[in-house]
Length: 344
Ligand SMILES: Cc1cc2nc3c(=O)[nH]c(=O)nc-3n(C[C@H](O)[C@H](O)[C@H](O)COP(=O)(O)O)c2cc1C
Image 1 (cartoon, rainbow, N blue to C red):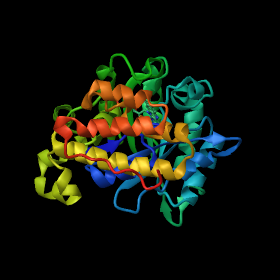
Image 2 (cartoon, protein in one colour):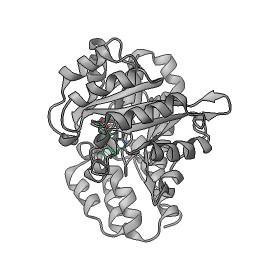
Image 3 (cartoon, helix red, strand yellow):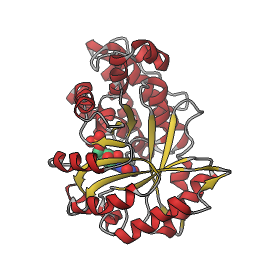
Image 4 (cartoon, rainbow, N blue to C red):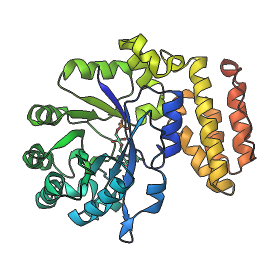
């Protein structure tokens, strides 16, 4: 059975989202937190506050993005100080703000900078918590401009004690669209000496099973937008394999079809947790709305179009709540009645 990892998505897979998903849908082996970055020479406080969202049952793995050894050490040390023993390093972010600052996919063409960072992972005494070494993984693309970049780095990565590499087989310049380069993925799969995780455009159980069949050495799949659109996907996949052990994860959520009443019950439970958290944490309609509207963004195919538009367009909390109540009153969802938050 493949490991299912929840990909990090800035603005979507927040701490409260990760925790609510783990509790309500489950089936995910580890949740990767969106990257921690440097702001004014220090780890960004807002990113740090969003970590440590779990009590211990689910795994949360923080991620850092850095353009040099110096940034890398500051960020890794901050996470180690918070008690993390696993850290993911981002070499795939395609956003121009990061790429232009030599971070994310912008680092892939710089063998020397990557070598320096990998040297730190291999040897630096600061990257040790007590006596147990901290595990590092890498999440990367094939390159910013060419797949040659990943293949030039692979010998360096192979020589570094990484716990895994996650590969999104697109170039940075493609962002999240366009063809996935399976030919280069296969070459990387053959040559990579670390456990390899595939990431990109997975949206169904059959695709996960196909990846498992086609790539028997694969350590797992990392799924982002597919899980945001279909939060039961990981649990459904686990249920296909071993219903009894999957049942220990969260039996009520397993085997639910995306269209079932159970799916929507879970979805509204998850929404309620996120909604209540937003009402407690933020002030004013627009701040609260910006945090709750993103919950629905990738769920568009699962809810009626008209209501999706109302949720997106709501400028006031009262309009938003009316739209949510309307979804619950659709005939197929008639037993779902979202609670009003006590803070409203
Ligand atoms: C809005 C957005 C934010 C993202 N933020 C991060 C991030 O913080 N760290 C990261 O490694 N990848 C980030 N990604 C990339 C995703 O983790 C993932 O690699 C990408 O969505 C492709 O996987 P998918 O097709 O399963 O969604 C982001 C992607 C999007 C669309």
